[in-house]
Length: 257
Ligand SMILES: [Fe+2]
Ligand SMILES: [Fe+2]
Image (cartoon, rainbow, N blue to C red; front, side):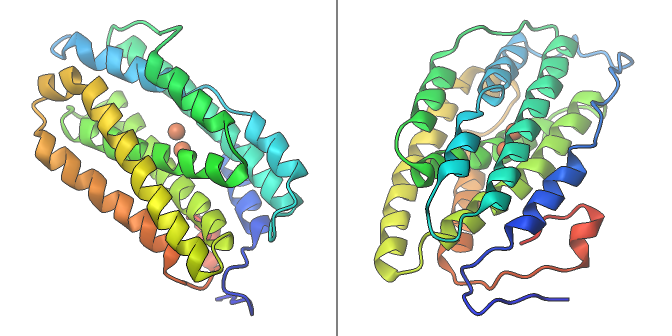
């Protein structure tokens, strides 16, 4: 059943909040110690510890969404973003388990995680979501790239589960940004800002995690191409005026795009 509203930019936030609500029932996966990861480089554990730190923040955006007077934003959106923040904290817990299995240790500080937190705090809801969208692109690409180099086992399984969650987050943020870019001028502004923010995020992560990428035998050019593709997909989801559709997929755990 496709629900198309008169205004194609309007989003059914209640559907998103139900979607996140359902996923919030998932318990943490049990710790599985059967796989031996001693063959993997220490840089990988360190790298994932940085992501663990970056995934553990958040919370202020939910309060901002509750008080927002932006067009098309309602209490259902605020409820959805609150659940989204909790889902990211679950990611932090899963990544902490990955770091432990890889023999690494958790970080208290990291300059890229601090920068990410600071960027999330500046500006209004729209610029915050733009920064979060860049983080989803980074998460999708980084976790899937690393997972592709791992032997089957819990770390690979968990990272792929995270990728699946981040894909839904990407669509969630794109739906929000689409609802906020209802004129040609706003769409142009978004495209410019998105280019700057997504390039900066990708470059920072490639430089900061170059050791782990190199140790995992990943080709920087291939990694960059993948990131560009996902970044462009996000741009298309925002600026191409795709009507909001809801269907039975929602009930199977798929996101309501
Ligand atoms: Fe995440
Ligand atoms: Fe995410």
